[in-house]
Amino acid sequence: MTTSKRELPSLPLALTPVVLTLLVLGVQLFYFDDFTPHVPLAIGLAITGLVGIKLGFDWHDIEKGVFHVIHVSLPSVSVLITVGMIIGVWIASGTVPTLIYYGLTILSPQIFLAAAMVLCSVVSLSLGTSWGTVGTVGLALMGIGAGFGIPVYWTAGAVVSGAFFGDKVSPLSDTTNLAPAVTGTDVFSHIKNMMPTTIPSMLIAFGVYLFAGYALIDADGASFEKITAITTALQDNFLISSWLLLPALLVIVLAVKRMPPIPSLFAGVLAGGAAAMLTQGVTLHEVFTYANSGYSIDTGIGEIDSLLNRGGIQSMMWTISLVLIALGFGGALEKTGCLETIINAIMTKVNSFAGIQTAAIGTSMATNLVAGDPYLSIALPGRMYAPVYRGMGYSTLNLSRAVEEGGTLISPLVPWNAGGAFVISALALNVTSGNMENLLYIPLAFACWLSPVFGLIYAHTGLFSPRASEEERQGWIESGETIADLTDRGWEPQGGGEPRPALAD
Image (cartoon, rainbow, N blue to C red):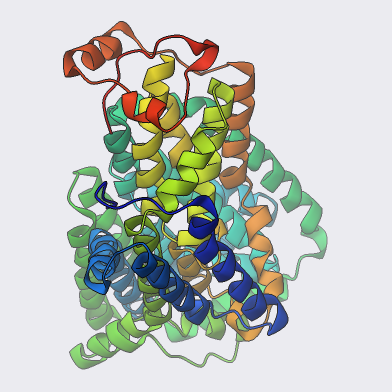
């Protein structure tokens, strides 16, 4: 997105839009206690535009950069729209109420959090979409957790941990395919190389959720009256039947058969609409209404009403508008060269594997924080750092793992990021009303932040940090390219030796 025809901004100038945007964002979130980051990010885009004009760009150049990144991420916006329809229609069909009902009657309250994480992992691995998992199974699990009296942020933490970890290791996931694509590896080697951070993180998270379940809930003192009231209300207002799980099963089957995610999810919308009309007595016009505006019901049970009164395309507009503005901000930062300047400054300060691996993870996290886009947080560091790994003789599998963990897994932990905004909206965390307590799901999504921690440990110990194979090295030699462009920027390989052959970015 940047161009060599224009001089890159100086580091202070490149940092200016980032720092000013974070300051404005901090005022909005913490001083005004208003969780609507849209305008601060729009101001950040405007500041970045002014920096670009100072550098010699005209507005049309910057506009192209903004819309390019938005265009690349439009499939994710399409997923948001489809998931919004699924939520509204699956509630009306009884699919979500059936999941909640069976969950309350079958699951043990003590193992619920651990089971929720595992279930979301399996579904997300099958679907290849964390957002689809959060908006469907995750929503049902929030209702089950409410029935058990578990704080919503604990349930949300377990759902996010499972959904985004399943997404991370699914060969059907767009981010799982993006990371190896931009770093020059293949998807299955990439997934295999993520196991050393994935497995311990999931095991630790599972143990914590299991312990928390027994610590939070006293089975003998559990409010079975509350559970009974919820299940009775569900039976009074919906036909509860295992047949109503077929829309969810259809989506999973289509995903397993490697159908594209958007058609698979839309098939779930159609199946849910048909089930609503056949079993719940809903008219076709009502199905259209629920798909657009969401479902509405008054059961008299607060927990159920707050959970089921949602869904529809319109419910996603807050999230979609935030995503589009954040993507535009990220696109402007990339187009003007601000992000490239910042990354170049980092690369000139590190000349060891531990340093570059730490920088790659940190850059992905920071891009998630500033630009608000998980795709940019994977693609940009992946493109920029790949030649450095090749120059050091390390496999770029290390880099693909770093950007996946700093990108995919950190995305839902940043509230104004596309991933975080969707989680907050789909799981009804209601932080926009000033209920910041629900943001505790962020530290409680253990699996998401433990994985980068393990990645940093391996970087500094040398464990699970593969050197380039002979096959990889041969590929670099055959390319006939070197990393002279990096040494021109002031970077030197560790030990001051000659750089090894590498693919140019």
